[in-house]
Length: 135
Image 1 (cartoon, rainbow, N blue to C red):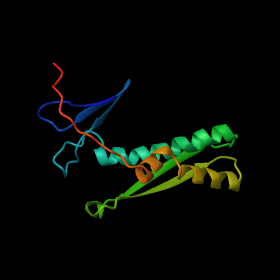
Image 2: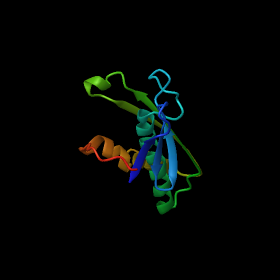
Image 3: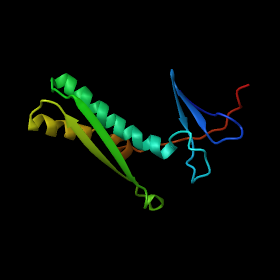
Image 4: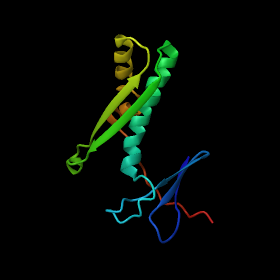
């Protein structure tokens, strides 16, 4: 389970606990937060970039492709989000002594990462329920 808890009653920052890992999220200064961490949109966008990077490494390891460096940049265009369009552009830079065909295959694999598929091909249903606070 992932748990998100407000860090202090006077602030907007929250601690996200995922197993043994912790991340801080906050609203931007423009949103009225203190920008103590990435905002939820940033985390959403980062998830697809991280998935692309890890999927390419996973594939390269299994196929014996000499992939050395991976860099994925994710740019957001949320200008039409309220109309139902949220556009992300992932720029993938990879390096290593590999053939052009191997490089092309890795870029293709990046486009099929599980989070990319989740964001574009799966209907996500979210239920929000009230529970008693832990004391």
